Each structure stands twice: as C-alpha cells, then as structure tokens.
Amino acid sequence: MTTDSSADTEPTSAASSQPSAGSDSFLERAFKIRSRGSTPWQEVRGGLVTFFAMSYILVLNPIILSTPDSTGHFLGGGTEGANIAAIAAGTALIAGVMSILMGGVANYPLAIAAGLGINALLAYTVVGMPGMTWGDAMGLIVLEGILILILVLTGLREAIFRAVPLHMKTAISVGIGLFIALIGMVNAGIVRPGGTPLQLGIDGSIASWPLVVFVVGLLLAFVLMARKVRGALLISIVTSTVLAIVIEAIASLGSQAPDGSNPGGWGLTIPAISGSPVEVPDFATVGQFSLFGAFDKIGFVAVIVLVFSIMLADFFDTMGTMVAVGAEGDLLDENGNPPAMRRILAIDSIAAVAGGAGGVSSNTSFIESATGVGDGARTGLAPIVTGICFLLATFLAPLAAVVPYEAATPALVVVGFLMMQQVADIPWKNLAIAVPAFLTIVFMPFAYSITVGIGAGAISYVILMAATRQAKKVHPLMWGVALAFVVYFALGPIQSLLGI
Image 1: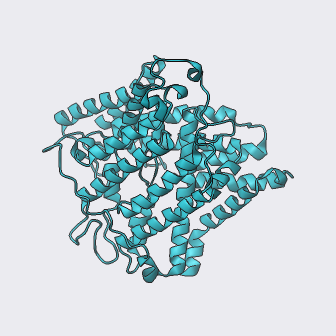
Image 2 (image 1 turned 180 degrees about the horizontal axis):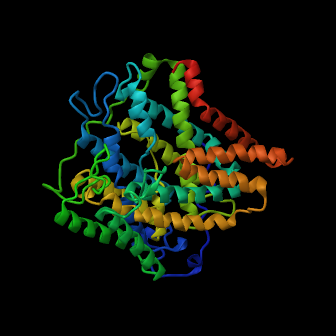
Image 3 (image 1 turned 90 degrees about the vertical axis):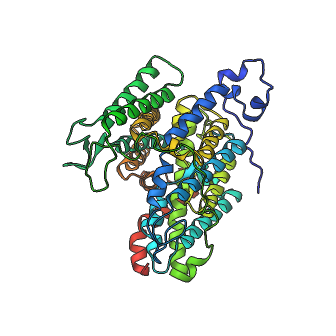
C-alpha cells in the first residue's frame, strides 16, 4: 500500500488563517473543523440532518430484502416470512459502524448505509437463481467488496478517479443534484406515474395532506435559507415531522398500498408511535453469508458476471457521490479531487464487505450526505454523529421510523438546487466537452442511476474527443473506463448469450 499523499491536504478557506481560542482542542486537532470553515455545532447539526435524510433506509432496506430465496427461506432465518426487525437492526448497525469509521479515518462528511439498487438486484434477481440462498448472495457482496478494496490498495481506483477530466466531475455533481432532487420528489409522491411517465401529485393536483407536508417543508427550507437562518434543513425536517404527526393523529391517513390504493396516504412510514419507542435489537442477519457458495450453485462464469456488474455500479456510484459532496462543501482541490481520497475509497470498500458480512447488502457512501453538507457540515465529525444516531436506532427503531418521506425529502430537493448551480462552470460552447457533460447530467435522473450517467458521459467523451482529433488529450485509463461501460451496458445480451 502506497502512502496517501492527499491525506493531510486541506482545502483553503478564509477561516484557516483566523487564529481562534481552542484551535488546539481535541476536536480541532482530530477534524480540523475551523480550518475548514466550520464549527462543532455545525458538524453536529449536519450529522443530524444527514441521519434524518437517510433514515428511510431503516424501513426500505428490510422491505426490499423481504423476498424468499430459491429454497423458500427468508433473510434472517425461517420460511414463514422475513425477519424484518433483524434486517432493520443489521442495517442500522452496519451503517452506524461504517459511518463512524468514515468520519474518524477519512475525516470527510460522508455517511454510509445499505445502497439502493444493489439490494434490489439481490432480492429480485440473484436469490431467485436456482439453488441460490441469501447467504450465497451476501457472499457475492463480500467478494465484490474485497475486489474493490484491492483496487484501492493498489492505487488503481484512485488513478481512475484522477483520470476523469474536471468538467466531467462537475457534470457528475450537477447530474447527481438533479438525481437526488428527483428522488426526493418521487419518494414524497409530489411527482408520480400517471397518464404521462410522471405527473404532479394525484392526477395532477396536490390532493393529499402528505403532499401538503412536503410543500410546507420545501418552502420553509427555502425561506429559511433565503433569510440565512442557520440549521434551515434541520428546522424544516423537524417542523414538517411535527406537522405530519399532528395530521396523522387527526386524520388517520395510513400508508399508501403497493397496489396503488389509498394514494393520499403516507409514502413509506406513518408518522405515529405505537407501543414502546425502545426495543432490543435482533442481529440475526450478521455473519450469515457464504463466501464461495454461489460458485457451486450458478457456476464460475455467472458469478464473475454478477460480481463485475455489482462492482462497476459500486465503483462509480461512490466516485460520483464523493465528488458531489465535496463540491457542495467546497472541499475539492483545483482538479476536483477531495482530501484523503484513498482513505475515503478504502473505507467505502470495507463498507461493501461489512454489508455483505452483516447480511444487509452492500453498504456505500450515501448522496444524502450532501444534505448535511448543505447545512454546514465540512468534516468527519458529521458522519460520526450520523453513525451514532444509526447505532441508537438499533434500539430506537420505532422512533426513527416516525419521520415520513414527506418531511425528510424536501432536504434532498434543496440540496439538488445547490448542486445544480455548478452547471455554469461547464464550457457549453465546446461540444466535445459539453455533450458528454449533458449526457452525464440527464441520464442520472432519467435512468435513475448515477452509474448510467457516468457511463454515458465516459463513452461519449472518448468518442467525441477522438472524432475531433483530440484523442491524445484523453487519459489512457478513460479508454479503459469507456470500454468497461460498454460491457456493462451490454450485460443483458451477454448474460443471455451465456445462459445466465
């Protein structure tokens, strides 16, 4: 393992030249809070905002991972049904530990939890393959995480990131901004499928109380930001949650049903507490993985194809998230690289291994971390706060589930707006640069995938640079990245050809 020369490189800020009492305190020495233009309270507040923005994973991950495997067994044990409580507790445990590790080791405001997309691939595809069990599927995640960690330790993952041109990194940030804004709107139900691919609310109207909660939270956040009120996002989330609790207590709206009935209900969690807010966690999923079981069940080639597809998605999702969060917090250097990049990538890779070993799917850096950065977080203290909240949530799962989508997702839209402002930095008159940037930006929200957006941008970039006789300006690694994405986009036909 080579030395991480970027580990102690800090972005400059006006605050770094200001002497202050307590600058030699433990927190300052450990996190360089003042040199990054922050305060301990900003970090705590940002960590709380990030937790609220991410807390939906404690409900959504157990729902996604609740399908039976090909043998009829469910995650967490048994054949009668999924152990939802154990999956939720495991999700919170791994997210808490890895977020704290990211903050303490990399000192970067990135929180970690089970990644969406990969968990759905496991639940709806992998465990349905003949003979495959949940343990085998989680073993694939552990293998994928180990491979990515090897790429980090050899320096290849960092080298690929550095090979991406600056304007592409800017486009990634902008695209992720639009992507998380769309996620926020879809999760809140303010836009949803209808007569057109998407429409406003219910039949084109804001016709339910949950949607009113979303609108109130969104407008409140923007008003507070315009008035330069500190903690605008946290105030918005807390206020909207209180409003949602009051509305549910009066109207008893319930939740939306999977079949589309009760469209005026809450999107995922009902803002109400029933029974005790404290429960003893069940960690039955932890350690339930088989590292090489899949090879006997589906064969070597199928395992390689699956691990490759999971690894490529994990590989570039993290890169996009890392640069987007850094750009939002003004933490990137002149080439668009964050400080201590190799440590960030290493912890993220370990999180994938931990997620598989914990039986809750690959864990990865969450783009929702940008909500905490948007509220002032700049250091690793913020994800440590987020991680502590996740650990507490293993005991306080009913309390964590009180915050509904409609109260938390306005923060995603607000951060999407903040990240969108970087679009002015792209040279739109230069088509060899502007077209790949445009495709990167639009494919992320339209394809609902950070990886797809980066892939579309990478492929079009090398093609247009070659077509305009600028191929020598393209880093050799970018050609390799583009080729890898060609294979990634053709995985469907490749799997069909191989009979997978």
